[in-house]
Image (cartoon, rainbow, N blue to C red; front, top):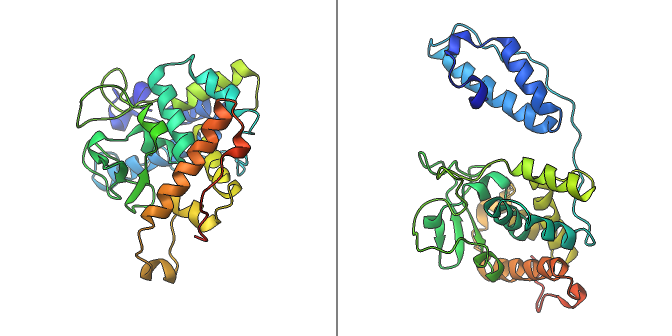
Amino acid sequence: MLPKLGKLSAPNITRDDIKKLVAKIAESAPIMANQVLASTSAVFSWATREGIVTSNPARLIDRYATKDRERILAESEVPTFWSALDDIDPVRAAALKVILLTGQRPGEVANMRREHIVDGWWQMPGEPVADIWPGTKNGSSHRVWLCDQFRSLMPNDDAKVGFVFAGPRGGPVSRLNDAMRDICRKLGIERTTPHDLRRTFGSTVTGQGFERRAMDRLLNHADSSVGSIYDRHQYAKEDQRIMTTVADRIMALAEGRDADNIVALERPAS
């Protein structure tokens, strides 16, 4: 919304302005359109409570019909897709590869901070940190083991703070959806989103013989069960082993090696 409406006075933004912009987004990304609409409505609801505007122009605009996506990259698609990433902006390419290798949410990967990487672990604060980190989706702190494959994708510099995948102006990398759409169009394959790469990672976890509970833990899915309240075991060794096994599997596919030889040395019942 900001490129189109950011310079307008809030009271002058109309319902029609918002509908037209959301409709444009919905042509290729209806889920994203609904998310943008919800966020815009939240901003105007706050502005209404603060007396900045008298009404919320985004209120009662119809959401777009969507269905749960089931798309994952087939094993045969991984090498072609991985190779195609080498032909786009290298920062976006690296971010998309990290989503596939770690399974973390695209927005969290885009906002990855160097100061959050400690002893090989990416430690994500659950709560937002003003101006530098948006917090995790479910508000729960989370940590991810970063395998050797990740380190090869990090920009080569000595910076200790800042975004790992920074855009031209120093902010977090953006337009990952656009990059994915362009790649799919070029390859002539079914539309694939950055979140589908996360889903591909999750499917690879279970495909390697690890339980769904392990997958949910690695993906930082919300767990409100009684057991989660009492289970404070950190699963560091288990998670490190699973992340390494899955990353090796994905890289074997990407590089056209015999992926069937990539197996876990020890598969925990976690």
